[in-house]
Amino acid sequence: MIDKLYNNNNLPKEELGQLIKDNLKGIDPKLLKLARKTRENYYGNKVFFRGLIEISNHCKNNCLYCGIRGANLKIDRYRLNKENILACCRKGYDMGFRTFVLQGGEDGYYSDDRVADIIDSIKNEYPDCALTLSLGEKPYKTYKKYYQAGADRYLLRHESATDSHYERLHPKGMEFNSRKQCLYDLKEIGFQVGAGFMVGSPYQTIDNLVNDLLFLKELEPHMVGIGPFIPHKDTRFAAKEAGGLEDTIVMIALTRLLLPKSLLPATTALATIDSMGREKALNAGANVVMPNLSPGEVREYYSLYDNKRSTGDESANHIEDIRCRIKEAGYTPDFSRGDYHNFNIKGGVR
Ligand code: 5AD
Image 1: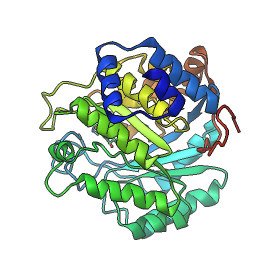
Image 2: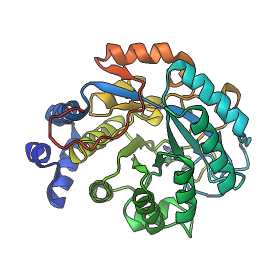
Image 3: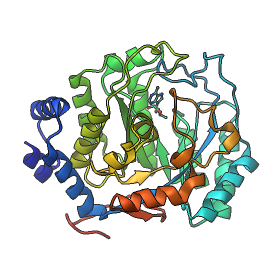
């Protein structure tokens, strides 16, 4: 089945389910090998660097798993203004970053005009950089405005492609369908789009994971963020078990085989549950890392889950350490924009 998936970059639903089930019991080394080979066919051994700027931990939403949910009164809230954000970009640019990712909760402070102005300022100062946004669900016209202001990419994890499971992770009023609509809107507008999900989130079944992969195959996003669920103490899921390292690795490898051209980050959540998590993700077909460029003094407040790694080598302050570790693992750190390429020929690196 793995060969079939490797050759066709697709698999019938039942076989995909079986493959997940088998590998969750113990990873077949061939899965990892072919995932790596697929990545190499398209992107060689490059690992793309993106500078992550967490612009605000205010959020109007109440996703049950998330530490910065609006109803959590126990955290200190912060937001960065345009000057703060530009200072982060400046720091990142000097370190060599050519992609900036602005991520934040759904925070009303950032009106469409305000975000457009921030985008415009960044693109004016750094025309050679790609700009990625990750600011949640917005109306079509807002996304369009962001795009017209110069944003290139947008990350919005789909979280779960099974309606009933999505609804168990989110409060009433949040639906998978709206998420899906946003992702299709973003694609239509012209963004490079990122979807993704957590592995081991509460109530998740193998069937749910199959649906996640099938949805990804249907959407064909350019990027897919996959990390383990990690409980946060101030949420209803505080006592739930975290997602597993190996389970996450399996889902990354399968995603690489289904979407060979995708850009797949080795996520901070994975690095949080295992000190070698990042390397293990790279060895399963991931090819992106996103060191944190947020100002040191606000970093601890962007607490999506407990013990989130934000210092040490998850932080861009230690860029040389990160670079070294990537090289030691056998990869080539790449600080270019690292756009998604629409390769025509299998095996051809543009
Ligand atoms: N554990 C792991 N990942 C989380 N996220 C939010 N809360 C958690 C958690 N408790 C992820 C979501 C979101 C992304 C920004 O972080 O998938 O889309």
